[in-house]
Structure formats: structure tokens, C-alpha cells
Length: 278
Image 1: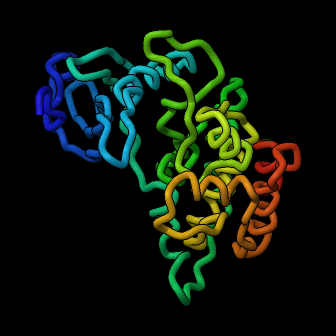
Image 2 (image 1 turned 180 degrees about the vertical axis):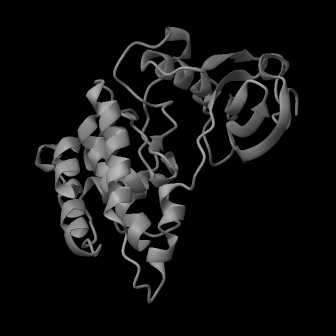
């Protein structure tokens, strides 16, 4: 493959001069690397376009996502961020955050006969990370368990390539076409089904956080549909509100139930969620 993503681009190598590098994720349209250098410990993201196949449309936006995320992080005031272009798309590097993600951390809670309850302090850390973003006037747009990194000092919310709330360079921008359907709010699913696009909102982030807490604590998706259902069928189920009963334990279950309300105006704000957990 020309410009193989099995290697870091020269521009990134020149900027970081790695002493160690490790490919963490290699999926269609992007790769993520863990890189150590004398400058520090970084996550490096490369994007390239997904070409059309018989059952998958072309997705040129994946080439732009790393630079768009870099621009968002700059707008939010984060340091040690850089982004730019390489021969197949765009790249960014940002500080590496150590720790398990939410789903992995709560794995012991999901055992068949587990007596381990999901700790509310972990949920509160996720809420605080999202509240920080919402306070700056942004919506994340892609809240999911893998995007909460539970570090030793604080929880980090990562992967902001789809976030909306301020201007990003026009050459790196692209429409929001939904996210992982497991965490998609009904109004987002309806809009994507109707027009192919949607507008991320803070209310939709609340729904996605509720769905993330639910699946991480119990292993169950918020909405019932066959595992192998095509994405439009999944979205129809979400849009129609075909929700499972929430069976997370105690007060967390009641809170998640409210966060998963079908109507956006019925969901608590991120600050109300934080108060409930505190």
C-alpha cells in the first residue's frame, strides 16, 4: 500500500524523534501509535481515506479526522498538541494518557455472578471530564466507554475529532454523520436516517454517557437489536426508543435511566448528573 500506515510519517519522526514506538490501533481509516521520545510520551494518530467496497461506501473524512481533532484541542487550550498533513491524509500528536478505559476497568462488575458493584467515583470521574468540555460550550459527539481513560490522578476524555462548539479550519472540517450506534441518542439516529447528517449536542452526550455507563457496568446495550443488524436497522431501533430496562444497581441505575430518556429535554444536564453522583 502506498504511504503505508505501518510506519510513522517522516514529518512526525522529525518532530518527535522517538526512542520507542508501538502501534496500538490499526483500523480502517486510522492508526494510533504510542510514542516515547525525549520530548515526552505521546499518542500519534494518522488518518487516511477509506475507499469504497461492495458493502461499504467511501469515507474520505477519515483522512481529515486527526487534524480536525488537533484543531479542536488547540481551541480548547490544550498544550503539547501538533497536527498537520502527510501524504495520505492528516496526523496529530498529543500527550499519552495512562490507564484503562471505562469498559475495561469495570470488567469485574460484568461477571455472571459478580458481587462487585460499579464504583460511583469512577462514574463521577467520567462526568467531570465531560462537564469540563460542556463548560467550554462544546459537545463531544462520540462519547463511548473507550474514550474515558481512568488515570491515576484524573479521568481523561479523548478522541475529540467529531466535537462541535467552535470554529475549526475549513480544510479539515467535515459533516457529523453519527457515531457508534450503541451510544447514539434517538434524535441523532433520526436525523442521520433522514438526512445522512446530524448535529452533536450536549443532550446527546448525556444519553451517550448513560449508555456507556450501562454497557460498562452490565454488558448490556441500552437498545435491543440483533448483534449483526445493519447500521440503518440499529438506528431505527434507537430512533423508535426500543430501550431495554436499566438493570444497573442502586442509584446508578435510576440515574442512567434518566440519562437515557427518549426526549433530550427530559435528560439531566451534566451538572445534575454530577450532583446526583456526589
